[in-house]
Amino acid sequence: MPYVNPQYLHFADALPLQSGAVLREYDLCFETYGTLNADRSNAVLVCHALNASHHVAGEYEGQSKSQGWWDNMVGPGKPIDTNVFFVIGVNNPGSCFGSTGPMHPNPDTGKVYGPDFPVVTVEDWVDAQARLLDSLGIDTLSAVVGGSLGGMQALSWTLQYPQRVRHAVVIASAPNLTAENIAFNEVARRAIVTDPDFHGGNYYAHGTVPKRGLRIARMIGHITYLSDDVMNERFGRQLRDAIVANAAEPPQQRPYRYSTQDIEFQIESYLRYQGDKFAEYFDANTYLLITRVLDYFDPASRFGGHLTEALRRATARFLVVSFTTDWRFSPKRSREIVKALLDNKRDVTYAEIDTPHGHDAFLLDDARYHGVVRAYFSRVAATLGR
Image (cartoon, rainbow, N blue to C red; front, side):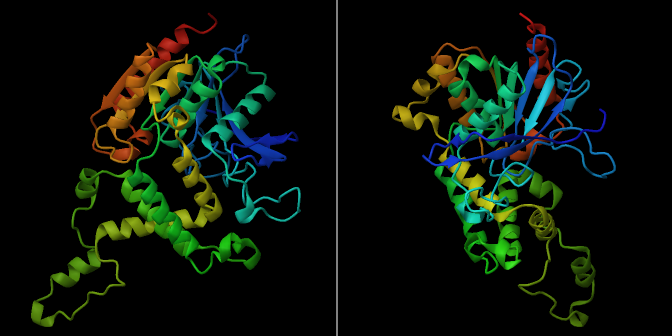
C-alpha cells in the first residue's frame, strides 16, 4: 500500500448531541484507502475502538513504526481488500488524534475545552460519521465494520441509518456493557481523576499531565483485554532476570531484596511498560469521555430492555464474530445480538473463533478469523453495483 496521509474536514453546522447539547463547530480527521468506484457502491466504513484512531492501515512516509492499527485486516489483497473496496477510517469527536476533542479550543470561549467538552455517545459519533459521508458524496455504505466499541458503532449505524448500510460486521462487541465492565471503566476513571496532576481536568492550564492515573487506567484495561491463558503462557509466575539471578545465590548470602515498590514479576514489567507508553500519547479527558461512551451504549433501553424490538429497525445483512476467551465481550453477548436479529428474520452469519488471545484477538492474526472476514467480504464484493 502507498504511504497514506490524514485528511481533515471542517463542519460549521452544529452537531446536535443526545445529551441536548451541541458541538457548535468541529473538525473530523479521516483517512481513505483504495478507490471509490463509479457508482460509489464500494465504500466501507471502519469504526475505531477506545484508544485507536482514523489511522486504520498503511504507513506514514518518513515515520517508522507508523503502521495502522488494523493493517493486518485492511489493504491490498487483505481480508478487507482495498483493490476492491474504498475504505474510510474516521477519528471520532472527543478523541485525541486530530478530530475536535477536549484538547481543542471551544469556539464559544476561545479556551481549551478540557473537562467542559460535551458528553458524546455512540449515536452522536454515527451522526458525525454520516455527515462525513455526505461530504464525500457517499449515500450508501457497502459495509460498516468495527471491533469492540467499533462494533457498537456498526450496530448503531444499522439502527440510525438503516437505508444507508447494506452489511454490518460486528466483531468482539456487545449490545451494552455488563455491570462488571462499567465497574472496570469506573476504577480506571478514578485512577485518573484522583491523580494530583489532573486538576479537575484543567491540567493543560497547569502544564501537567496526569500520567500516573493514565498508567493505572491502561494497566487495568490491558488486564481485561488479555485472557488468563495468554497471561499464563507469556508470563506465568516468571520473575524478572535480575530477581532470578539473585535467587540463584545461596540463601545465607542473599540479602532480603524484595520490596513493595520493586518490579519483580514479568507480568508487572509488561503492564508497567504498557502503562508508560499509553501515558505518553493519550489524553486523560478523552479517556474519561470515551469510557463513558462505552457505558452509555444500550439501544434496547428505549424498548424496555428488549433487544429484539431495538433491532427490528435494522435491515442490513450481518456478520457477527466473537472469540471464546474474550471475557470482557464474551461470545454470550454476541449471541444475544445474533438471536435478536434472527428473531427479526434478518440475514446473519455468526462465527465463534476458538482462540487463546482474549479480547485483543480482534486485532491479531488468526487464519480462521481472517478467513471468515475474507469470505464474507468476497460475498459483499460479488454484489457491488447491483
